[in-house]
Every structure is written in C-alpha cells, then in structure tokens.
Length: 236
Image (tube, rainbow, N blue to C red; front, side):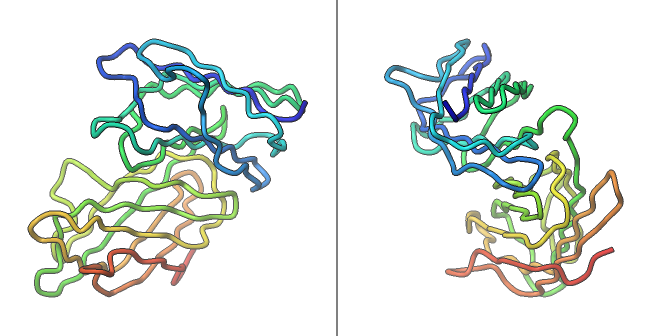
C-alpha cells in the first residue's frame, strides 16, 4: 500500500511532551513534497519518553527524501515539544530514513530535519536601515523558498541585541540543500515597545557553495503591514 510509516520519539527531558496538534511534511531531492500531514492516533500521543507510530496511507512517494518538516499548532500556552528522532519508511520503495534531532520544536516555528547526508547551513545577514527609530524589539521570522522546497518558518534570534538601527544582524540556519533561492517571506510579530522596523535588506549565503542572494526591501514593517515577500535583487 502506498504511503509512509512515521515513528516519532519524544525525549525524556522535563516538559518534552505536548498536547498540541503535530504536523509533518516530507520533501524529496527532486523538489516535490507531500501536503502537510497531521500526526494523530486514537489516544494520547507525544508524551514524554514515548515513541509514537503513524501510518500516512495513500500519500504518494516523493522519491529519495531531502528533508522533513515538523511543527505544532494549538495546545496549551507551553506546547513546545522535545523530539529525539523521527524514523520514516517509504512504503512504496521500502527505503528507511532516520532523522536524528534531539532538540526542542518551539511555538510558531518549523523544525527542518535533513535526511542523512543532506544537511546544509546558510548564513543570514539582516541589515536594519539608517532611518530614525528603524530598529525593533519584535520577534522576526524568516521563511526561505527555493528550487528544492522551503525552509519553513524560523525565528531569527541571537545572543546579541538584534535589529538595531544601521546594524547588520547575523544568524545561521541549519537546513537541507535547497538549491537556488527564489524568494523570502519576512514576518514581524509587532510585539514590544518599539515594534516598527525599517528593513533594509537580507543577504543569504550557502555556506557550502558560497553562492549568495541579496533581497533588497528598504521599507517599513509596522502597524497592519508586518510581512514582506521579497524576490532576489542580485545573486552570485
């Protein structure tokens, strides 16, 4: 029978389980992907220390896997989950994949787990413009779209004071090989006392190949305009 078998192991750290709805998406190395699939059995899934099995029957194979994405929605205010690993079997081809993770999946973000041998990292440099009150204290999220899929929603956060006026904030995204970038989606959640933000540009570099893409914006994200979809201005 076509489809996938998915086993999710939850860690034994305090608060590792979740009562939120959990979703998964599988992406192939040829750029195709499944629709999002809800992981749900009759019972209490995703408890601390447990392994939970799900059958995604009728889901067509996307071929050799490049990565999987996992995220959760709803649940209590503290609905983060700690995933140790995910085991996926493609029932069509018989191939099996182990995705080792051992980390938290936090609220409002997507965990991207590369298939074995498919890991890649990207340097993200975000320039905040040099205009009055350009900086922001809001949370900023980034989604990258590319030839082989998308990154999912990632929080841009470091130990520095990010997104200050006339500064470049740098981050590293640990993803899978995505190929040529086609656009990015930037979101501010509008929180904090200084929520308006003047975004200058974003530069993303594939750390393995050195290829880079610059996304110029030079405009405000504020009030009822807190998102921006930006195509590459230059690349190299």
